[in-house]
Amino acid sequence: MDSSAQAKIDQLVKDNTIMVFMKGNKLMPQCGFSNNVVQILNVLGVPFETVDVLADPEIRQGIKEYSNWPTIPQVYVNGEFVGGSDILVELYQNGKLQEMVEIALAS
Image (tube, rainbow, N blue to C red):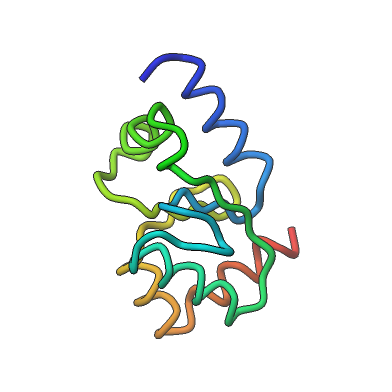
């Protein structure tokens, strides 16, 4: 990953309390896994931002290196990598995701 892609990803993760790198955007997810993440965050009623990795091949590859995680979507809360769709579903079902985002939004 080149330094400009890394800087761009760094800035997005730092500037947004909840940041989702996904296929499509929160209004029009382009895959089922991205849609799962959007639906969960919408149910929680929390503000979040998205980046469409399909629109930027540098970010699409760069985010995988940045997190050392091979799949999209990727969710960051308070600058920390949380995981992808399966992990978000699990955290949502056991109540930990709501707790995590409430703490993040309060800080």
